[in-house]
Structure formats: C-alpha cells, structure tokens
Image (cartoon, rainbow, N blue to C red; front, side, top):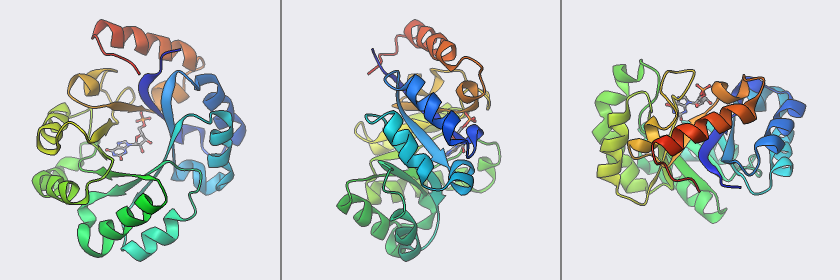
Length: 224
Ligand code: XMP
C-alpha cells in the first residue's frame, strides 16, 4: 500500500493507550508516522510511545515536546524518549549551550532533530514570525533533519525551502482543524503534512485518509 506523506498528531486521544494503539494499527502502512505530545505523555507516560511502536514498527514516531531549554535539561528530557525517532525543539533557543548540545546528543543516539521556525496559530505573527530570518539562520547553523513551518501561512514554507535547500525535511501542521486544506503544505514545498483532529476525531479515520488521498491525487502529489 502506498504511504501518504502524513504524520498523524495523536494529541486528541490523550492518554488513552487503547485508542492510540488501535488508530496506529489501523493507519499503519497508509501514513508515514505518528506524533505524540504532552496531552498523550502526561497522562499515559512512556508506555504510550512504546504502544505506537508495537502497533506500527515501521512508522516514524515523533516526540513533540517542543523542547525549549538549556542543552543539559533538554538532554535530561530526551533520554526518556527511547521510542521516538525524532524530537521537536524550538529554534529560538539559539545554538550555543542549547541546540548544539541537543543536536549532538540526538545524532549520537540516531534520532532526528526537528526545529520549529514558525507556528500555525495566528499569534505566531506577534513574536516568532518577525524573527523568521534569524530562526532560519539558526536552523542553517544547527543542520537539523527537519523543520516545522505552517500550512496556514504557506508562503513561509516557500521561504524556508528556498533558504534551507532541497534536503531539509519540512513538516507542516495547520491542516484541517486549523483551516488549511490537505495538500496545501506539500504543494508549497513541504515534505510531510502533520494532521491531527481531522483524522483523530473522525469516527472513520480510514475514510478521511482515503479522501485526503483523492485530494493529493488531484493535486498530483506523489505519495511515498
Ligand atoms: P491539529 O489537530 O490542529 O493538530 O491538526 C496539529 C498538531 O500539530 C501541532 N502543531 C504544531 N507543532 N509547530 C509545531 O511544531 C506548529 O506551528 C504547530 N501547530 C500545531 C499541534 O500541537 C498538534 O499536535
């Protein structure tokens, strides 16, 4: 089965391991991966990450804790994420004493670093987006595997792609519940669309995936 370029954000399922496991099993093979965040990990603990891994061994699992601390503390946190293939951190921390240490640690442990350079909510325009060029420069210096840029302001995806080149992975949230149509981010240069509630709140997630597939096909988006 072809895999759609989608990471399913599991936040809406909270700490319900059974539901998370079931969805991961149902969608395994039809999406690239799954993203777990505080709403999952605080109530359920690390078992929820291990449950996704077991339900879909080949999926990319992203730990979205949006790390934003000194290197020491981020490493103390990252060591408790053995089930994660990739970890999201904020880029506004800067390199020295923060992202340099995190990148080195993740490299050593064969995990991917993903940096947020802009966010999908409107308030990102207040403080984050005015610093976009600086944040892109930080990403250029840190050389993460990927960055997060919003489908709700897709021109930012275009800027990031132009500035950071063809090899960096661009992951893009903001599809569905936040207003952007599936396919918007990929058409603007992203590699993966992060989709949460549109899928996780549906009584029939497979049907939603099939609809997204039709949408992608119409836009000539090639799947993996
Ligand atoms: P929904 O339900 O809105 O879920 O489709 C989106 C998921 O993505 C996260 N999110 C972001 N993560 N930068 C990020 O790193 C962002 O700009 C951003 N916007 C949304 C959100 O927490 C949820 O998991």
